[in-house]
Amino acid sequence: MITLTDKLQTLMQEKSLRLRKITLLDIAAVQEIERNSFPDPWTRETLEDAIISFSDTVFIAESSGEIYGYIICGIEDTGEDCFGHICSLAVRPDMRKMGIGTTLVKRAERAAIMDKATAMQLEVRVSNTEAIRFYTKLGYEPVFHICGYYADTEDAIVMMKWFRL
Image (cartoon, rainbow, N blue to C red; front, side):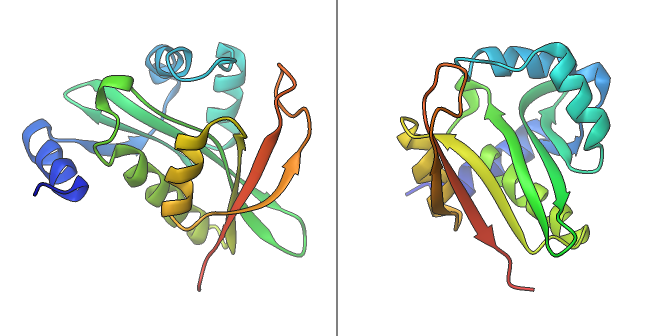
């Protein structure tokens, strides 16, 4: 039986999949993945701001110049605690279920830990059961709901993963 890890390793070997920081030159490809992944994709300006603001914690998965997925993660320091915050994660529809999203999340988690974060948080649509299952498998737990969080007034579930440091 071929596992998800086997698929990702094969992809990384055959296609030279690598992770790197997002640059402003990647905006068009990231926007395309956004449009194919979310009902309310971020604008170009929002993406640019995030890439500039969170330059140490934004990554893409690519091979031979083709971008397969990305993660935008920020660091929030409350003065008492420091948390990573997954703002956006998406993988091209034809490249899903191959471990790319998991690899991107783990890379962002490592970057957050390097920035002294003790946990990672994110928001997910209550209707996005596939994403909720994905994050649960990675150790994220639902902590509360936010009513009307999205532009279409759909509620969000806030999920968190605490790091064992």
